[in-house]
Length: 175
Ligand code: SF4
Image 1 (spheres, rainbow, N blue to C red):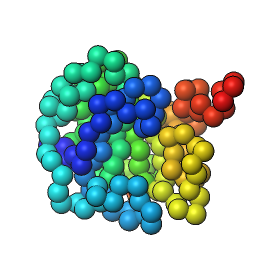
Image 2: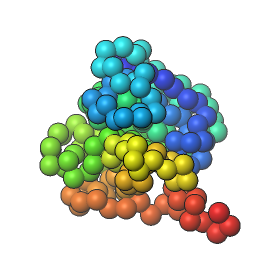
Image 3: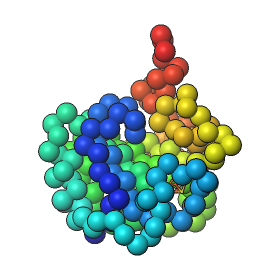
Image 4: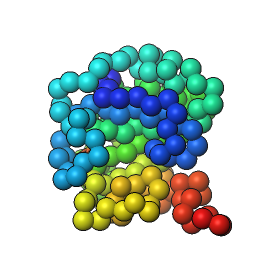
């Protein structure tokens, strides 16, 4: 079961396009100024089976992608694997937010976390740092957070920047 703090069917702020955003319950980072403090407690939330969440995603035919946010999705990596496989099997894009940085994740070597991130298209890594807070960076809360090619970063064992232009609307012509 996946412990969920919240679900948005039609988010436009958790990545490009119209996305389903799933906010996981539980985070151990305690970032000052956290955007979602209700998702921090490790106990609470609502348990969903992966198939149930996938049905909620598939109910919106306009959905172009899915974002796992939090809370800390990597704390539930093993439970999220079947859902990630269903999402990718349906041809949907998958993005994951984490308060860890990719170098920490790779060094930790947690098999479920690495497998989950190898399935994802995009990883936004790093904690929210209030001293680097930015309102002008789309899809990120603070300037330290990186938009990475998740699958390639895991495969190559290093941080690889995402090269999907839609993740950088501030750089596009006329922006
Ligand atoms: S990692 Fe995200 S959810 Fe966790 S405390 Fe920091 S801002 Fe909040």
